[in-house]
Image (cartoon, rainbow, N blue to C red; front, side, top):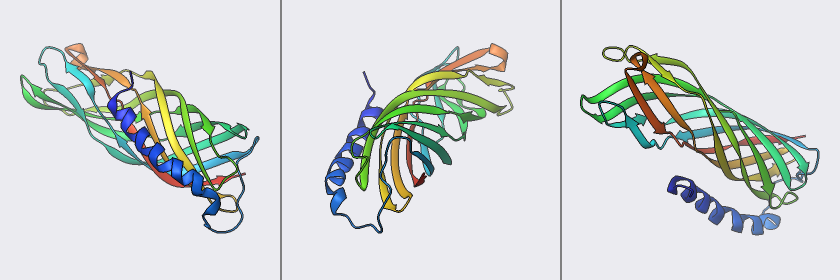
Length: 222
């Protein structure tokens, strides 16, 4: 069953995208535009809010809950249209997050920080590829690679995070601005889980990070 964190942004996106698609042919945003079509590439640059959920987290021995900070990052993505209505998209971006444990037997514990590189590949269905406003939905996989992980110090002397593979879901829309340029809004929900080994394995923490990625940006079609 999809979590509420996945359903809420998707319902909001559908509510916004559906009327926009119907009005697409009547909105005058500028010059003639290049419609999406088979064999076309699209490159986008987005500003993305990475909103971690930390669902179902736990810490061995001392109890408590894992907390990770949110982040805003730049994201680059590449799309290729297999046919007019189907495209594959690969995104690339990295974010840094602080990690803590709250409500433990030791109180609030700063664990450290980590960078995560989550390349995500999705298959998208575009509802209106020839219209100025083109909503789409997608699904695929995210590979999460954790690197440059640092311990907070004090009681926490070392931290290691396990790389993972997880499903991802997507909803968004391209808005043609004229010529080869488009604006883009996009929401992704990834179901990333990971396990942290703390102080050489003296403690283990597990969490469903499940970050929601909310992005806006600009793209170029060729």
